[in-house]
Image (tube, helix red, strand yellow):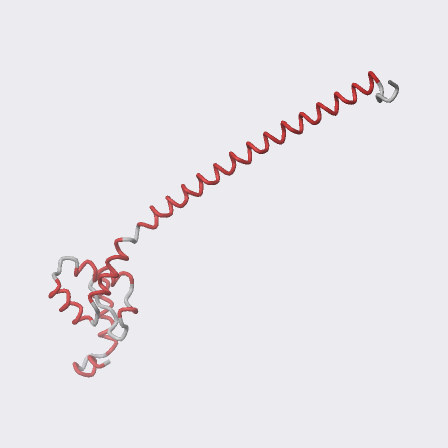
Length: 141
């Protein structure tokens, strides 16, 4: 608005020029919005633009855009870690899979033990019934 009044250019024209410049990939964050209002694309562009700058040039860049060097640094870290979620996710998944396999193996082992105990108890009952059928209750003796 201020630029529009100072230069005598309509706000709509300025808006269109900004949209065209953004379409070409130029870094043009909203003047009103602080760094919190910057899009992810703008932050990434700022990181790329400042990657090769020394401290003095970085400070000048930040002053022109109303930023702090530490904001650029935190954006750089976020960009570097952008794809680490995949590795961390894979590690968590493999750890969970290992734990689940161990749990399944333990449960299968316990089930086999209980099945053996049940089979043994059933065999003892059958033998006891056969013994009673052959020799009686044992009270006759």
